[in-house]
Length: 399
Image (cartoon, rainbow, N blue to C red; front, side):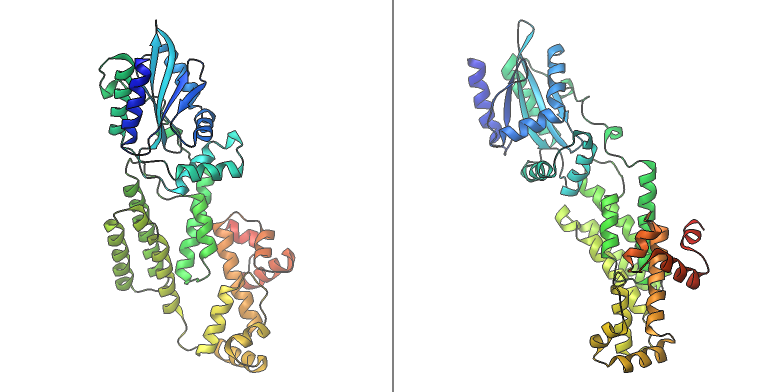
């Protein structure tokens, strides 16, 4: 009875430091109680991710406390109450994060547990609950754990006595297999090519690349530092691509330096997260501006920009005329006089340029690329591609 009273008091004291919950399990792993409002769901998470099984297996043999973790960055700690050398109850603290973790990192961690075949609604509910889980430094979690152990046994231990061998090691964390790494490289090349060409229709490509990689895989206990490294590396790559696209080195390097300094000055992940998108958009718009043909009148340049932004649609001269307020007849003659191409040929060339990027930077099939650029058939797409480039799409991809 004294242990239960001591643990009740200790649980209240721990809660004074934040929403850090305590749990009690019997020797068979049945939950006896907790002070967590999401008890049913989080106890299921604890079991589903294998933490309860590890806890019981360890506690049956050992007396010292244990730290348990997952690929999501969620931690628990456990201390064991024994009677005549036999496990009687296990007391658990958690869950907590040991560092700030983004929702994207949680989503990536869930892929590591794809074998569990959880539902989408379950994963969404988990993310909602984990958003409320506190961040607690390892040293503080360890102190709480040692206090629990003392209440249960009267024994003073050191932090080094806490077993952390069951925590996921770097090799256990989600890694992209080799072929997926190639996909990341392909996506990166596509993003950089869009900078070189000043392609304003970049948002879908940028979104797709973020689902493949969360950034530079630097393993660090400092999530903010890791994110800063990713932003700085990405900025450096984009800066060089912009120079290749025609932006002056003076302007490109000055702009890149300003974004790198902004990344270094960020105090939180919330300050840092918007920077990559802002930087990428800024560079693309500057390259687009410097590549804009000064010989084109504003209405024709508007048509060119409209075409670039709607390559995934069927575009006709009749669609462009209302954009600039001209009749279709007048626009077609003015467009050809200024560009040297009729509108239909310009649209074909623009679509083939986008197809070249997709062939080199994605693993989409020729059929998928043709459909995404609104060609009526794969054969027609291949004929146009051959006429423009002198190669078939397959030859271009393999070249």
